[in-house]
Length: 403
Ligand code: FAD
Image (cartoon, rainbow, N blue to C red; front, side, top):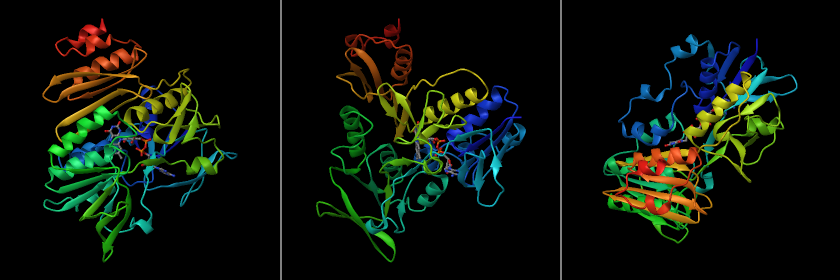
C-alpha cells in the first residue's frame, strides 16, 4: 500500500489527511507534528480564544478519536529533523527513520522575532502563533495594565482589540507609514484606524522600534527610533512571519519565498508536496505565498486528490477575515494592482470597498457586510465584474449585480 507521510499537524496537514480519507484513500497515513496538541485552528488565538470566549476543545478540528477511527497515525511532540530523498524516508529525533512513497510538507510559518539585542529575550514579550503562546500571553492580559503592540498588521490589531476589551491601556506602534500597509488599502486601514482610536488605542504610525528595555529581565519600556520612550507592562509582537522551509532547503528542494510548488502542489521533487503557509505558487506573473486558512485547506485538498490519483489543479481563490471588537472584516480576492476603488457605504459601520483594475473586479473588503462578501465571492469566482456605479448605490439590492 501507498505510504503517505505528512509533516506538520496544522491546518494544511489536517486538510491533506481528512481529504485523503474522505475520498476513499486506503493507504497508510502518518501525520507528524512538533506541537503537543492535535491539529487546531489558529485564528481564535488572537480572537475569541484569547478573550476567553471560546473553550479549548472548540479549537481542535476533530477530537483525538477521529485519527484512530480514520486510521491516521497521529504523532505529536515529534519534530522531523530531515528528509532523505534518496532513501525516501524522514528522520526524527527518537524514532527510527520512516519511509514514504509520498511526502507532504505542511510545516507552516513562524513569527519574525525581535533579536535579543533589541530586548527580544525579555519576559513579557509575546508572539501569537501557537496555543502555548496564547496561554502564556493570557497571564499578562490584565485590566489596568499597559500593552505595547508592535506591528499594525491583522495579528497586532486583533491583539490590540482583545487587550483593549480586557481593560488594558494599549499603545500600537507601526514602522510603516500606516497600519495594514502590506495587506490592505488605505481606505480599509483608515476604517480600522478610526475604530481603534475610538476604542482608546494610541496608534502611532511611521515610528520604528529601536529596542525594548527591561528591569530584572522583564520588559518595562520601548525606545523608539525618534527618541520617544513608551512605558509598558508587556509587549505583543506581530511583525510578520516567515515560512518554515528549513527541511525543504536542507533536502535541496527549490525555494522562492517559501517552498516552490506547481499547480498540483508538487515541489521540485515529484514525490514531495508542500501546502499551506510554507508553499509558494505561480499566480499570473508573480509567485505568491498566502497566509490564510482558506489557502491551507484548498492546497491540502489538492495535494490529497493528486496523491489519490485525481487530475486536478489548484486555483487560488484568496479570502480572509479578521475580527476586531464587534467588527468583522471579510476579504475576497487580492486587491494588488487596482486602479479604482468604489465605496459602498450603507451606514452604521456597514461598508465595503470594491477594487477594480480596468473595470475588472479584483477584490472586495466587506466590513460588517456578509452580503457584500457573498456577492463578491460569487462574482470573483465566476470572473464577473459588476458596473461600479451600481455597486456604489447602497439602495440597490446587491443581488441584482449577480444577474
Ligand atoms: P500551521 O497551522 O502553522 O501548521 C504547521 C505545523 O507544522 C505547526 O504545528 C508547526 O509546529 C509544525 N511543524 C513545523 N515544522 C515541523 C517539523 N520539522 N516537524 C514537525 N512539525 C513541524 N487565517 C485566516 O484565513 N483568517 C484569520 O482570521 C486568521 N487569523 C490568524 C490568527 C493567528 C493568531 C494566527 C497565528 C494565524 C491566523 N491565520 C488566519 C492564518 C492561518 O491560521 C494560517 O494561514 C494557517 O494556520 C496555515 O496552516 P499551515 O498548516 O500551513 O500552518
